[in-house]
Image 1 (cartoon, rainbow, N blue to C red):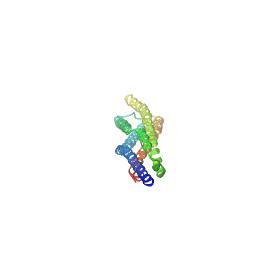
Image 2 (image 1 turned 135 degrees about the horizontal axis):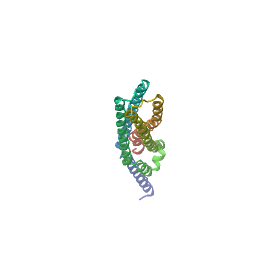
Image 3 (image 1 turned 90 degrees about the horizontal axis):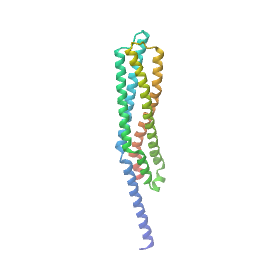
Image 4 (image 1 turned 120 degrees about the horizontal axis):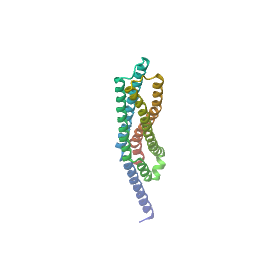
Amino acid sequence: MKPVLICFALFFSALSFSAHANQDCYFKATEKLDNIIYLAEGFNGSLKLLNNFNQKTREALQFSLVLASGNTPPNDYMMSMVNDANMMFNGLSQRADTNSSLSGYINFSKLKNEFNACLSEEVKLRCPQTISSFNYKITSLVSNQDEANRQNALLADVKNQVFSVLKSDYENKIVMTPEKIYNFTQNLQQPYMRYKMSLEGAQGDAALLASIIENELPSCLLR
């Protein structure tokens, strides 16, 4: 075979190998796409549960304030709101466990490492921004979900303390004070806001990561 033909054969063989490797990268990235979409929906569900819990808790505390202003001890209606809020938080914690299990199944660390390991130099040069966005969103998602789980535990502790006092005052017919209700509200608000921010971040990360896989990676890896 003439040298020129050999060069052409090697060149097209290299192109074929690169294209095959790029396809493998694409399939690795899309393998868990549906699960990432479900995860984004799971975070959105957690946000709704968290907001419902916050609303019901605030209603219970507002009603406690009304009772306190009339020098009236807590009643059954107030405790029913507390019990409703507690059930909502239990549902929120169950959803957090489900989201964590789904993230464990996706295994973002493995997904990221395997994806980057199979990228050809050609693709790295052609699509640096897309690859960078893919990696960053995974890192950010994992960080936000870890923070959401941490805030879930912190909010659970504060919620248990507040609800324990409310229940004790109810059973002992102790009239609440505006100062106590104000402190309860402030104590609950900080972990709630941090929890909400981390869930919003995780939901946005998961949704954008899914969009990158669906809409940006094909033009980088399959052309």
